[in-house]
Length: 268
Ligand code: ADP
Image 1 (cartoon, rainbow, N blue to C red):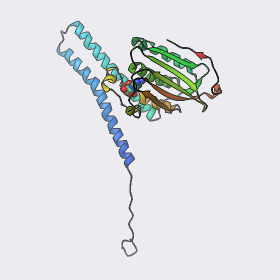
Image 2 (image 1 turned 45 degrees about the horizontal axis):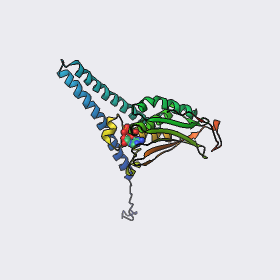
Image 3 (image 1 turned 180 degrees about the vertical axis):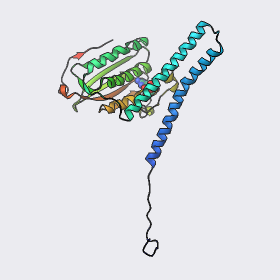
Image 4 (image 1 turned 135 degrees about the horizontal axis):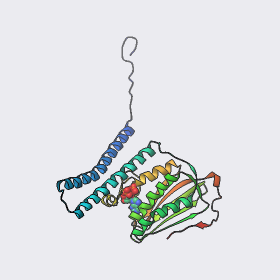
């Protein structure tokens, strides 16, 4: 208004709250997903416990079958809560990161050994090929979690009697690229962009039946980023899938790229 109170100009203010809306939608979707994932095992546990209470004279064999189911669904809940806490720590930047120089072949061989039993159950040949001189700047627990999640998936979703391998190479950008490959059914092209999203699954029923939480690959992505690297996937239907992630190479043990090196270890 001017001095005599007459309107002189108009000020219009526009707020673009698209991003806020997107965040709000993502939050709502996350809460709905978490509630659904928690409710399913909880209602199974409740159902079995109520039946046991209603039939106190139930046969021992049936009883132990029911208790086995209660245990299975409680484990699933515990696993889900652990994964949710991990996602939350990583997303809020509160994950403890203890960066140190790690000899990659040691980390890989330890995790491959841990997963040998899972692989044996599916008759899967699990191998690794990592140059002994490769040292990464990483956190042993976080690196273990990335490798465990990718290897567990490769065995779980790979074919019976298939092959799973871990390889690592050093590139010229002071980075080390680790890959986990399987010769399983592959990931459909339309799912490749969404595979790292929380709770995204190609076959929901199959993933849940195998004890999956749907959070494994989003944890992998967050950890790779927390360690200063990135993660991506390549897959051909009917031929297999390879997940790649990069890690920083340890400056204490820097080596010239493409140096021929002795290959350590290969476990069949
Ligand atoms: P989940 O707990 O369901 O395994 P993830 O986040 O680890 O959750 O994986 C998401 C989905 O990606 C899985 O449900 C599965 O459909 C698909 N997937 C992951 N790894 C592979 C693989 N190696 N081959 C085929 N599909 C895979």
